[in-house]
Image 1: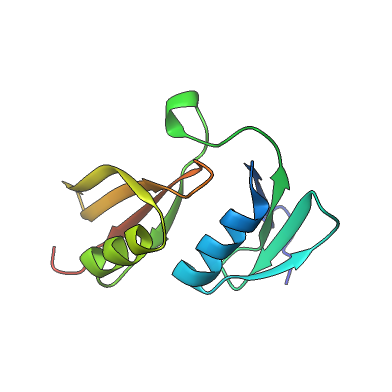
Image 2 (image 1 turned 135 degrees about the horizontal axis):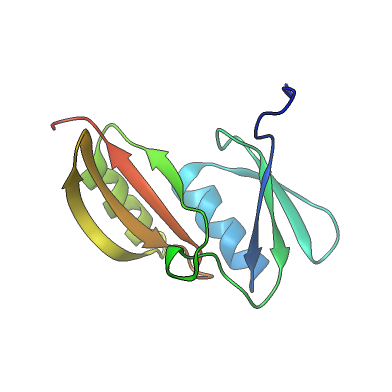
Length: 119
């Protein structure tokens, strides 16, 4: 349900929509709907969004926003995303309130996963 003046949707670039779709479907069970050859939308992710065809990627190094997932088992989630083709760019580290790691999916977009479990 859309809420007035609340974040409703997020979009990311991807240079290979099929690789990105395969990664998120396998790693996080996202569901995709294609809207032509250059755009795909996702649901079942906690926040709806999409990927558009572009030779760009989102990263914190270039000032991009960081989307952070939550996990009850950080190490297992890290193993799962690596097994699906992600590259860990910041290994698990502690911060006040929990621990997290950062990864890039196969098209280079950076995400993070955090947990307060076992902290």
